[in-house]
Length: 269
Image (cartoon, rainbow, N blue to C red; front, side, top):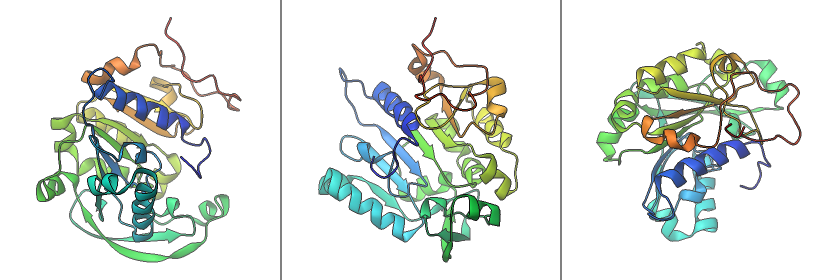
């Protein structure tokens, strides 16, 4: 996707691998993807066309406008019509919240960012907006949303609330989950990052893996998940354990400094 270089190449790799496993070339079928915190669709625009269906949850108006424009320009009007763009923030309970906006709106959040964050990422405040908040479990019933097969979550610290409001969905549908796992964002939001793993485990997930950044496609597990250098988590249901074929997760920390170029995933054997 343009504008992001290779910062999420590993996320794109695993998302593609999961969707392909759900819709193999020899038996193609539509896959339902929930993009929670979609922004302008960096990871999911490739799937915003029939027979696939993307439900994009994005409370920020400017990001929603860019998302719709990109789908129209890159995939066409049919794809845009097939994509459900839902203008809410997902959370643990119904209500409203104040979203902090920044000049780079991929950093916009429902939680305050400390000055150190603003300096590190060269952010400047761009105002605030009040956004509606709904738990996914209730919203699915209200809007008659199809069961998700893949869920991507990137909500700048609100991940815990999103999972808490989606536990029925996770337990019943057992979608694959790709979620941001940031020490910085969870600290800003006031909780321990490990709580996200506990919620996923409580929802029935046993295959929990960490991803470093950029081109490192390696899946990390066990003690590696304690490292703040793990930026995302991949949770797989038993039905998708086959996507691990050919890859051996590493029970070690990512290299420091990162290898350039990264060797990618570790072949089995």
